Amino acid sequence: MRTLVKNIKELVGVETSPKQRKEGREMAVLETVKDAYLVIEDGKVRAFGEMKELKEGNADLVVDATGRMVFPSFCDSHTHIVYANSREHEFVDKIRGLSYEEIAKRGGGILNSAKATAAASEEELYDMAWRRLEEVMRMGTGAVEIKSGYGLSTESELKLLRVIRRLRETSPLTIKSNFLGAHGIPMEYRGHQEDYVDLVINEMIPKVSAEGLADFIDVFCDQGFFTVEDTERILEAGIKYGMRPKIHANEMAVSGGVQVGVKYGAISVDHLEQMGDAEIECLKGSDTMPTVLPGCAFFLNLPLSPARKMIEAGLSVAMASDYNPGTSPSGNMQLVLSMACIRYRLTPEEAFNATTLNTAYAMGVSNEVGSIAVGKKANFYISKPMASYEYMPYAYGENKVERVFLNGKEV
Image 1 (tube, helix red, strand yellow):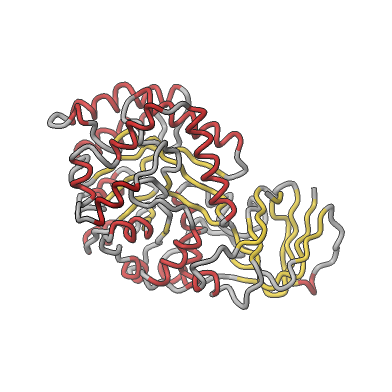
Image 2 (spheres, helix red, strand yellow):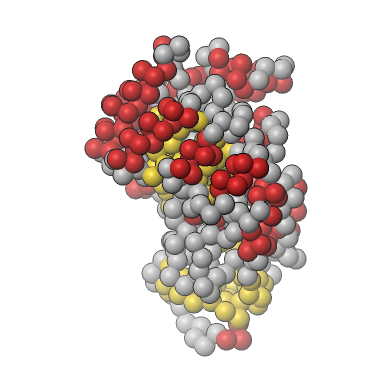
C-alpha cells in the first residue's frame, strides 16, 4: 500500500544520513522540510521532500496535512506499564512528608505493586496494560520499552514478561522487553538479600531465557536497593543468556550504578538525579546512553539530573517517561518534551532529539524508528494546526496530536 501525506506545513525530524544517536552539539540540530510531502510504502518511509519536488501524486491513500506538522513518533525507552494497581494512597503519604525510601522500608512502593501483581491474572494485566498503551499512542508514542519488576518472584516475573510478549504480538507499537527481577528486595529476604540475588541468577534468568522473554537485563542499583556487587553478579548472568544490560542508577544517591553500567556495556543508565563530574567523565566515549526521567523527578520532588551539563560535555541525552504506578504515573511524552525545555533548559531541538532518536537508541531500535528517514518504519503523527514546532513543548497542557500512523497505517 502506498500512502502520500501532502501539503505538510513542516516535516520535522528528518534524516538524509541516518544516525544512531545525537551527541553534544549535534542535539541542537533538528532537520526539517517546509511545505513538504511524505511517501509511505509497505509500512516504511519511501521518500520525502518539498512539495515542488513531488513528481508522482498517485497513492492508495492521500492525506492532506495543510496547516499541520508531521513529527516522528516519540520513543519511550523506560516504562513499567504492566502493573495491577494504582498507588494514590502513597501519593498522599508523600504529601504528608514520608520519603520514597521510608514507604519502601515499611512494605510499600514496589512491594505493594508486587502483591497486587501476584493476585492478578495474565488476562487482567494484559487488559490494563493495553488501555495504557492505547492512551500513550494517542499522545504520539510509537515505541516503548516495558520492564517487568513488579513480580519479585519467579512465577510473577514470568507472568509479567508473558504479558509483555503478548502486547508485542498484538499492538502496533514497537515494543522491547526488559527483565527487572532486581527491582526491589522482597520482605522475606530483608537482611540476607544475597539469597534473593541468587534466586534471580540461578532460577529467574534461566527461565526467562528459555522462553525468550527479554531483550534486556536490568537492576535497580541504588541506595537501599541493590549494591554494585549485586548488580555485577546479575548483569554477568544476564549477559551469558544474551540479554543486554540496562541500569536504574543514581536516583537516591551516587551509587556507582553509572560506572557499573558503562563497565558492562549497558545500552543505557536511567534516572541520574544524583550525578557528579566522575559520572559524566565515565560516560564520555562509551556506548551507554544517559537517560533522564523528568516525570519521576517531578512527582517525587527529586533534584534534577544535570542534562544541560551532560550535553555541554559532549554526551548524548535521552528523556523517557518512567510510566509506573508509584513514582511517575504518566506516559505522556508530550509532557516529557515540555519538561525537558522548562525544567532542564534544553532547547526545543535538543528536547525533540532526546525524546525520539536518542530514546530509540536507548532501547536499541534507532535503526528502525526515532526519525523520518528512508527505510525506517513509518511511525509518525500529524499535529493539530500550529504556527511552529516550538509550540509542541510550549503548550504543555493539551494533546496536540490529531492523527497517528504506525507501521504506515493510521491507528
